[in-house]
Image: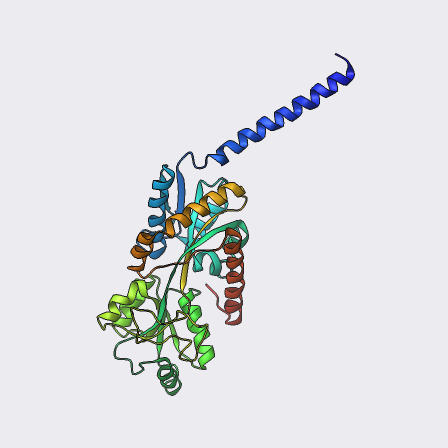
Length: 332
């Protein structure tokens, strides 16, 4: 074989080998998914994040015809689940359903405990739902709206207790923002049991006010065990038409509507990311899915693209970092 022919043969074989290699690597991507998919949830079963993860997983199972398995990795305020997802192979077979606390707030409040940065080491697929919140009060509390609450708090400095799901949780941070905007001083009482703890405390007058999600509290409001002073949505909600928004009562931007979304490890191939994104949208946009979730006070809220959701997460992370630092919030 002449030298020129040998060189041509080597180049051709190298090109063919690369083509075969690319074809082999592309095959799993083109056919995704071909094996069980794991969806990590950073909490024990039963909460809002777990509920929406299970709804989506069941429908993805039906759509993809492969098992989509929930993996509850509770503990360490979400750190275990975040790190397990970030360190997984970025092939689409490990996903995470997280929320405003795990994927926006934790990066600052638990920076010393984390070995990753959620906003950088996880990529957003799409937001899934929002859960409306309300400023809630003990039924016998003198105030029936936000202005009356502010007036009462100013006249009774340090005598009002407010609850939260823990130091650095968004109900805690929301109340700090509200207190600063209103110029009032109240006592913080954190509850490790989350909503289950502070709802009981609110009913019994152990605390007097709290920012709470309506998925957990609406039935208590309807039964007059709790009263709503304001809702945090941009507009009034049909379930509580007579309760004005925080904006209407002079405090725009105060109060968080909790969001839950889907995430994947950074480095996920674009075709796989697009496949997951479109599949989730197909599921969440179904009228029966929206109706089922609405009954649990969960509003479907989807992102325009995975890139848009990742950008949203980065913005949320910076926003909460500022709130935490400005209020000198520290988790001991």
